[in-house]
Length: 221
Image 1 (cartoon, helix red, strand yellow):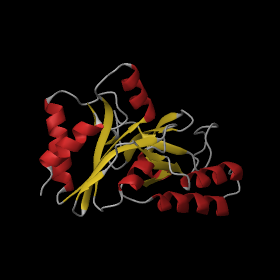
Image 2 (cartoon, rainbow, N blue to C red):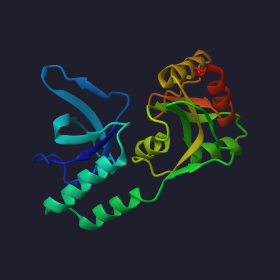
Image 3 (cartoon, rainbow, N blue to C red):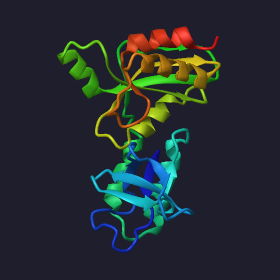
Image 4 (tube, rainbow, N blue to C red):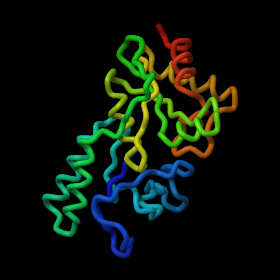
């Protein structure tokens, strides 16, 4: 989930500007705060390091399965109507959308058929650290999308808060994205390979070859 600052409450922070990107800190997420039964709060960390608990209506947010054009639309509208923004910074953000930050490892392949996709990606630093330490596994995010062909867009949204490019390890098409993803997660959890310090909930210590094999084993034919 990507958060975009669209309103600046008085006294909030001198370090932020309209259009600042943020993301939910996964240890807390979105929750009801005691004494505020009618308001939902989220703990947000911005791209400049500022962290705060704040009511969600001070933000517009884009869920994982929406397209990056939604973020682009928000930013373009802010640039058009708001006078207090850094237009050069906005142009830079918008231009970044046209440059894909999602790469593919040499052995990447799309396998299977079906309307859903299970995908796996990691970061270059994870691949390099595994190579340096001769480790067989490294942190991998395993998720799914409800439309075949949307995996790269989903990963592109998820890495917005990172300084690194994402590396696609595999994409598998199937008839049951939720069931297949869940089966892979459960298998890796049973081997105590869930990454507890990860930026999200679906990161596991594995590798491209294993995820490919697990997908073939658990996919719903």
